[in-house]
Amino acid sequence: MARDEIKRMMGPPAPLVNDFPMWFSTKCFGFVFKSMFKSEIDKSMYDTMLPVEPRKKGIKMDELITNIDMDINYDDYKIEMIAAPILVVHAKDDTMPKYENIEKFIAKTNAKTAVFQTGGHFITGHGDAVSTTIKEFIEKTK
Image 1 (cartoon, rainbow, N blue to C red):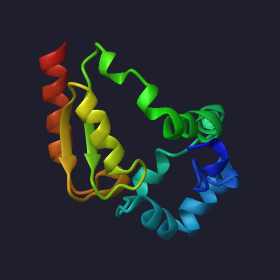
Image 2 (image 1 turned 120 degrees about the vertical axis):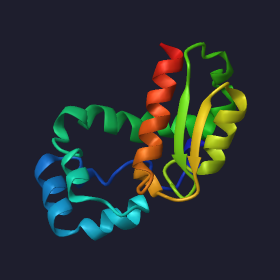
Image 3 (image 1 turned 180 degrees about the vertical axis):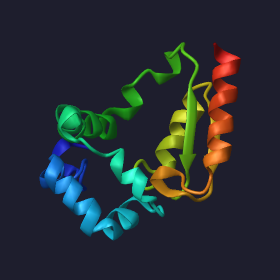
């Protein structure tokens, strides 16, 4: 796949990568985020998105370079050589990233996994299981 063949959005809309528009959007148009993230979002979750400014360069780099390169060259990444312990926590109905890509990652690594059928991008409804999994992972790998 070539760079110009990638038509889907690889990051958030540019206006949202600013503090005031993000704040305003989460306060007035939270339903859009619920649809985008495929999750019921607690209002406190929106607060974790702010401030956007310290993450702006990284968000832009992901959108313009990292996400596109991983789509185009995923098989060239030597992820099977990662020596550090890996934990993958994911919901199959999360569309960012798609589960098929997560499956490829898991297959190439020795990752511990916690995969849920539902929950969207924030894995809503599985907080206790996610917390337990993370705590167990940390204990086993420290």
